[in-house]
Image 1 (cartoon, one colour):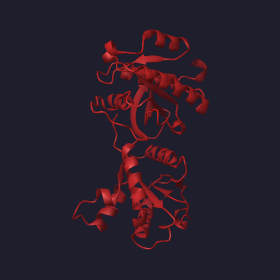
Image 2: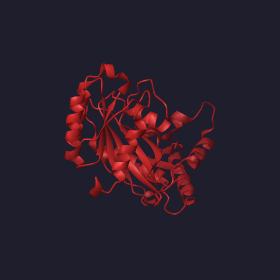
Image 3: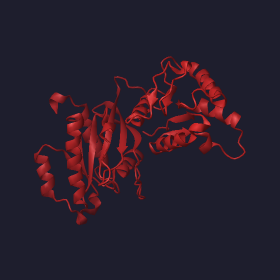
Image 4: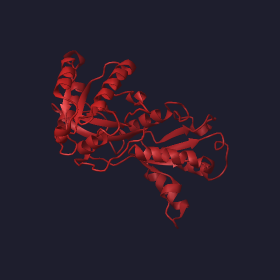
Length: 317
């Protein structure tokens, strides 16, 4: 199931534009559709008409604030007022405005109705992503969970370059992304599948890969129901990294259902990971699946395998 990206209007003061531009790029990388005047307005376009139109078309408005901007008079206050007017037209309980503090500052009285996100905190961006994903569920973009539809968050973990993003691309879009794409931070996709007559909406969090300079940010696993631990069959070191990540996941969030995905089965003649290593892991209780993002072999199966494990009662695992 393909769905439209969540449109996000970035309300801000000109003084905060450098920080808001960085946020724009991170949100775009994560798979959302942010709108920022400096990035989206075309030459000759009348901004006094374009900005209200963008607010009305947005699924979420992020009101970005700092010490410099909260007391400032001018068009920022008009944007906030217009966003509040649009919010009044939304159904009761629907999230439309999220106040975002770029620095420590007082929140204007008229925005205190909504819980703010402090982007300057260590886990601020992760909390913002969680808020945005939660807001998209129940909107026109994603149907709300029901007894017939449950939602599960799955994270993609592993070294850089093992094929996490291409696996997601093959699973969600049915295509192979031949060009290597480096994930910066996290990218979020979604797909609905059926497990034993149960519809399941999978929220797929593709986390930036791990290397000798940076580790996977395990805080992104908050709320995850399971994860795919991806390694590259042609690169033995990626399996060692996968084992290290798994141990840290257990230490951070406890035992969570996962499957070891050994990618690039189309290149088995070049494999450095041997069958004995995988059999040893299976003997330790690991679920192991070989895949090829290039040919599609095993890709649907591994997501089905993990989802079946997730929806199965813990007593039956």
